[in-house]
Amino acid sequence: MAITSRLGIHYLWIDKLCIYQDSADDWRAAAGTMQDVYRNAFLNISALGAKNEDEGCFFDRDPRDIAPTIVRLQKTPDSEPQRFRFMLEKGYAWRSSFSRDPVADRGWVVQERLLSPRVLHFGKKQVFWECREQNACELHPETVYCYGDLRRTDDEDDVEVEAKPAKDEKPHLWKQLLNAPDRQLCHENAKDKDLEQLFLDWNSVIRFYASCSLTVPSDKLAAVSGLANDMKRALNTLRPYQSHRYFAGLWEDKLLDGTIWRVLSPAKRTKDYRAPSWSWASIDGVLEFRSDARDETKAIELATVREARTRYWGNLETGEIKGGFLKLMGPWFRMTACPQDEEPTYSNKNERTAAKFHMLEKAEVPPAITQIAFQARVYFDDLMDVIDEAFCFAIKGDHSDEGTFEASVLVLSQVDNSVDERWKRIGIVSCKFKSQEDARSYFEHFTQKEVVIV
Image 1 (cartoon, rainbow, N blue to C red):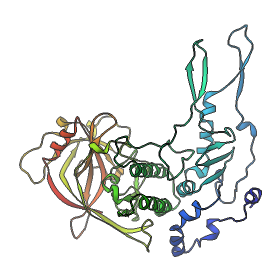
Image 2: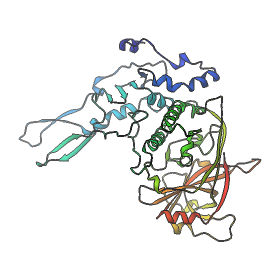
Image 3: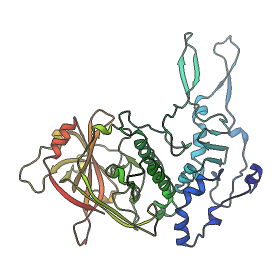
Image 4: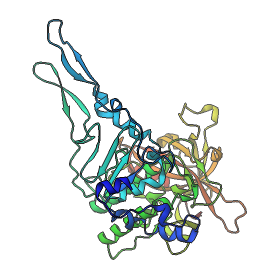
């Protein structure tokens, strides 16, 4: 109340007061309108430094904590002392201050920050500001983008130059967040740059969101429902005569691409059902999608989508779901991983090396994957998923940033006690070939099969 009164704002919306917290129906109905609430607000007030609702926005602070550290040094014994500022403090001190505050890593806050036109963060050490035009803080009231860059001049003195953020030539559906990775732009060869940029931005947001925490794990899809509705509206504006269905965090337009994600360290699959195994929403952990901004004109789809469905609660396509499946047709084979004691020293225990790919319905033996590809690395989703033998299904291949051709292969396990043959995802294999032709010809050895992944 004190903040809105000081700013001259007469209306205040507080979710805990405006949504019945003990009513699942009211909560689900409200979740479908979050994008309208936040996008049409004048300002979002963030109690960034509060551990709980009782702490509020104002904290006892020492101004010296955010004041720049100035030192006086002599360049030579005979020269006059000059004032210098610690470079890392200038470029990065505000980041540690922001990221250490409790609200910064909360999952629900991501869409609130992105959808709101302006956000005023009250941290424990300083106040931060986010909007489309500027990100700033008390330490850097002009802009937080002030990374130091040392360059040599003719007289060999070190001169500090402020690096300005690159001009954004493609409109952003949302804004750049203070603590999120810098935005990446789509590949110059993209056929439909506006559309490709939307999906690139979506993947970046989900990657950032996946690193955040949720008090209630079942909120995984609901906490980005507003963003998904906003994204759907943008897709309908760009391509009004196309279908843009949403499947548990993945988009119909890029369904195969959406399945190509991996965990950066062992993650946890939730005990209670929340999303199909092929969706990133089924996992709690830090994720990475396939390398961004690739040249899609040189990609090959090894699988085709036959059907996709999700069953959701109520009428909200972007909210919580009851179930779903993905039916694909593509190369099907068995994988043998290297024995644990023969593995290279990977940084994470969920990583293995694929030693062999085996045909299932053909007599001939395919060339050894170790002879064709110079890397076949397995990333299991959960430590409980790590096994020596598994079934695999090839999805897609494209050129990587390293100049190689990378094929993505899902690792599958059969669902126990299923009436019909159904499979669940347990990991992904990254196979790196010298060329597109090497990858294409290799996977042609394997039988095509229709699989249903749940």
